[in-house]
Image 1 (cartoon, rainbow, N blue to C red):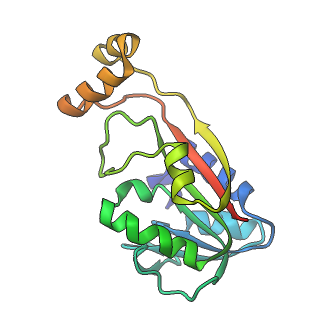
Image 2 (tube, helix red, strand yellow; image 1 turned 180 degrees about the vertical axis):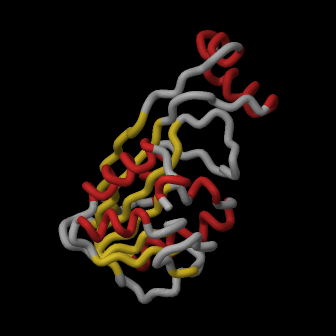
Length: 191
């Protein structure tokens, strides 16, 4: 399964996120797609429940991040990689309290960083500041993972002039970045 869906940088990011999970944790992996990340985590000694709205195979439980079917403090750690950017504002407002509710200690979030423009079903854009606000009351550790994006043609010219203009024009014209991507990975620990 991993060979058909995931790129090398996706597997590398999974490995980085796995390194942030506290040792021998119970983990809820939200937005699992399949059980690839679950297997990586289990290889590190964790007990894992993988959850996705529409599971694509493997040992994945069907469930919705806005209504998690677990008791309070059910897991030592909750991960959500490339999930939050796909949610509407209403869904996001419901999902964050659910994630906090089921996490006993640690939450790890991974979202696209500096995405131009929002696309591929991405409805949200996050900064480190925005994530810190959403997880107020938690100690935050932020990381940028992956390659810096490269612009071509009109994007490259606009990026030299004004990145705000680049973002605006990219959204209007639907210009997409063509190479490279960076990800914002945030680990939040309850104080």
